[in-house]
Image (tube, rainbow, N blue to C red):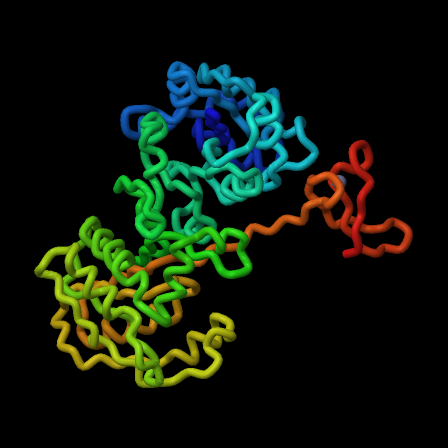
Length: 411
Ligand SMILES: [Zn+2]
């Protein structure tokens, strides 16, 4: 079954940033007068984003555009840039809008293609990633959009793409995932800009893939999430995770002098990073030193996991110690899951206070927001929170009301 390429329009195919405010406040008359301000994005690799639909169609692929803008606007933009398409879904075409899956499912329905991970939705923001997830498509986020790559790291797409021409190498798209996910799953892997997630810039924090918590439906099929958890008890995945860390370090555009793990609590016998990092040394430059005891934990903190970020940052103060002479050298700190960053932040402060030069952080995975959506048991549409006009009581009502479905549930 062939897949399709569905594209978001604004800030994915064309640069409409000059109209962003007018579009946000729905000043459509003003938008209409300023359509000439919409620009193409420059070429990213061998193709410019607005050329992608035409190039894909010439290659025999089905292409659609799914946007939350009105139809007159979308048709005008697509005409202005001579962007061809097989299906166009706009704001007025569905009852629900992104991040609801309805617009994407509508596009697939028109094309007569069932939803599958073979089809891609290419967009620039969190809503695009979430709607692709709910529709059962693979999500692609583009680096040239306005969303910060750090913001997208906790709602990360299946593929993070920096060059438009990536989509034209259809044989390689499957290998464009995160290095930690590819290696733990045993998938095909091609190194590229999006092989690692960029989670923060002060300090710089990388992650090798996505961590889905147990309450996320994606947890069950994420080998990386299971592998990260298992490290607490045994070294089943130490070799493969070590390979992922080692190769990721080797591919950085920055070379540390030392690699240092976040230390275990005083009560913990097992150092979950020991075997993993010894394995990693087989994959990066010999001149990079592994310093397993570069940091020590001198404080046992009770109930740390249950604390909020503010309580955590207070509790973690003074928890670490370093006897090592860093002499201004660069250090890469290793941790398992990057959540809110209090632990790594305190480790970085300790290293810096002990004379380290630049410290960056590499984690096995970045925790992900759960995309939740209440589905109507009667028809599969999304449920919305509604208010009874007589009693003012809240209830779940089907978004297919009144024409398609009357189902309600208690709130
Ligand atoms: Zn329903």
